[in-house]
Length: 126
Image 1 (spheres, one colour):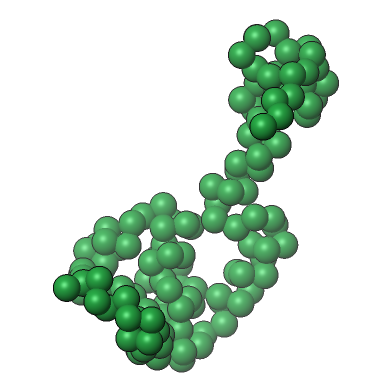
Image 2: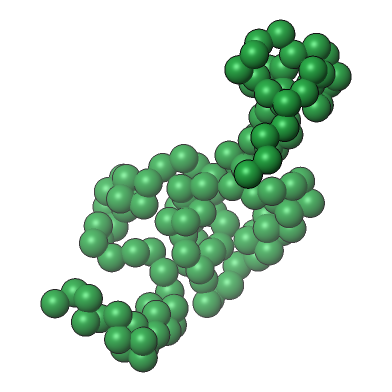
């Protein structure tokens, strides 16, 4: 493992004042490098977010609709967790949906069920 010791910040070029800071002068520069704002939003870059929004805004009978924003997804609770910062359970309780069952279309539920039978992961439940 290689440890990089620097005198100047890798992002802004300022002198690193703390010994324990090895690469960046501040949390702000480290977050810039790691693109934390985009990572926390659920999608990496602006064009990815725009593309996902465009795809999700078209109604599709093979998808389920998010009851918060009205967009269409195969796995609604994954979207809810990433974008609306709400767990799947909180979402289902808030909208009085069946709590123990995910918000996914029937074809997807069947596909995942068949996959569990094929790779025998259902045996882990016993």
